[in-house]
Length: 113
Picture: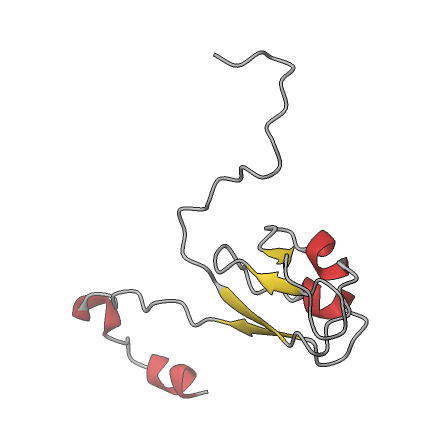
């Protein structure tokens, strides 16, 4: 049992049970390594790479999981074109039963609007 005042290390982060809802691509030639995207990311799915880019900075990189597709990293980035955020299409849910799909008289007009 952990002590009540103990702090969990920041490097240990539980992964979510839900699949990622977004994806991030980062152009390492555009990234200046300021870390604003890393600090602003709510699910903390971005990090600074340990390797240096050709400009001598540690560019940001996507860890590959937990992205929500919120785009906050994109809006915080001072370098236009360095970050692109993609919202992933959620898997389709099974459709309702055919009995519920039947429209009542007059509803077909409303559904067409």
